[in-house]
Amino acid sequence: MDIQAVKIIRSVRKTLVIQIENNGDVIVRAPKQLSEKRIQMLLNEKDAWLRKNIRKITARENKRIRRDFVEGDEFHYLGKKYILKFNPTAKRHFICDDAFSLSLDAKPKAQQIIEKWYKSRARFVFNDRADFYKELMNAPFATVKLSSAKNRWGSCGAKNTLNFNWRLVMTPIEVIDSVIIHELAHVHHKNHSKDFWAMVRKHCPSYKACDVWLRENHHLLEW
Image 1: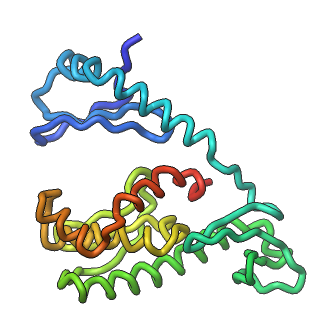
Image 2 (image 1 turned 90 degrees about the vertical axis):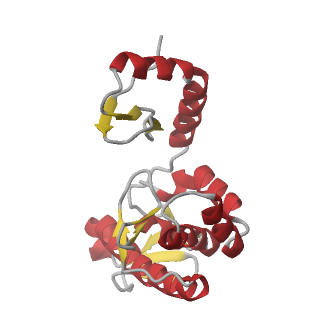
């Protein structure tokens, strides 16, 4: 059976892009004038590649750790694992050695409290690292904003606004840095040219390994 696009998004773009969502759905971004018949022909040409990657994504999603925000659930911050514990004497939230400790009365709002804490830390960490690399790369940016984008860790807007998925703060600092460097390179190069990649490579020689880490550990960062 041919693979079908769940959604076709048309715009003034010149090229066709095939995107596989985390649930295995295929999204096609196509030029306005490209017919559905031609789109299906292109999907058929990519059939083997699509099936291979849908299997990979499905397998990755099946590995996703279920979190109910109960005692013993595992969370990550800056690449380190923390266990959720509820403590009658704990403050609303803090990190103590290997644990996220919450007071018992915070239990009904555990997810809300933890996500709020993550976003607070993300703002601090992302701004701190972006300011550091801004000087090294001579790449002034407008501001740093948090995102909840499903399939994008970072982006750089036309006016050099940096957007980062708040869940990125769960990853090791070198992975965070690689994403920040990637987006700051876009301050100079609004493309993925050789000059762009040369700048990324100069400031983050291990960027490919960081990309692999994100692909292989994506399931640790969601719930």
